[in-house]
Amino acid sequence: MEGALVGVLAAAALLPLLGAARSLSMHRHPPDVALVCGGCVERELAAVRAGGSCRPRVRATVVSSGACDLARLDGARAPGDAPVLEDRRAMCTVSNMTSLLRDFRRARVRHVLVLTSAEHAPRAFSAAQIVFRAYGIAVSCQRVPVQHDRSGEGREAMWRVVRDAVRALLFALVGADMGVAKLTRWIHPERERASREWNAHRPSLHLPARRAAS
Image (cartoon, rainbow, N blue to C red; front, side, top):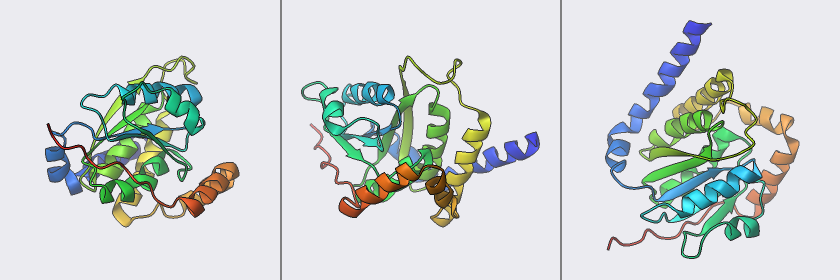
């Protein structure tokens, strides 16, 4: 079993080589979008504040399927910080990335900064690296301080990290997660309903234009 896990992780780690040459060159650019993985109010507010403190300023801080409403999120940023945008199409950690990939590519995003808690960071960062780097988008991650992590050690179970790495790998290889999303809809019907309603009215995200270099 341990050997199989190592093999899966090795395959997931090698996949970004599909877009490595381009993403490594883009990693020289600072992040132009901050991506907040939603699901916890405290995490989202801390991440929005962290996204606002990025220098040079990011084009936007995007909160994917958050627990907070936009007014509260917008209130967490300081005057002059990048705008906060919300998107509610995602139903899980992997779809935090896959639901926004097309929009990021269309907007010519070069570098995504993933903002999440220390507990969630290994799973979110591994999925983001596989999905985004396979399409030439550089990825970095910043852990934001969250007082009430579910794990006392600030870590999720390894099987969850591996599971989402495999899902991200399947998406990067074939452009789909082979029906796993249907299982997510069954387990979390409220997320599926929110995603469907949002997608019916706002099927894409529109990012502000990249600021000209001074």
